[in-house]
Length: 25
Image 1 (tube, rainbow, N blue to C red):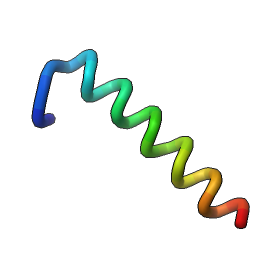
Image 2: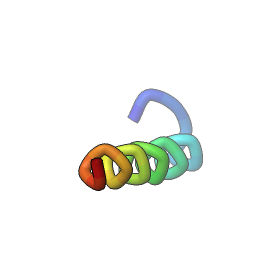
Image 3: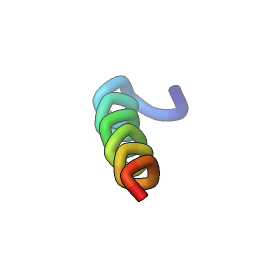
Image 4: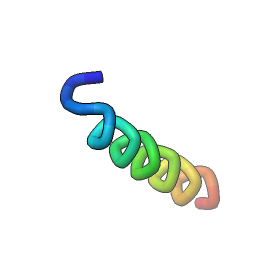
């Protein structure tokens, strides 16, 4: 919600990926 919607979607996807990796550990 800081920049454009496109960046927001990409940012959210990256956050979800990071969260998945952290949860895996």
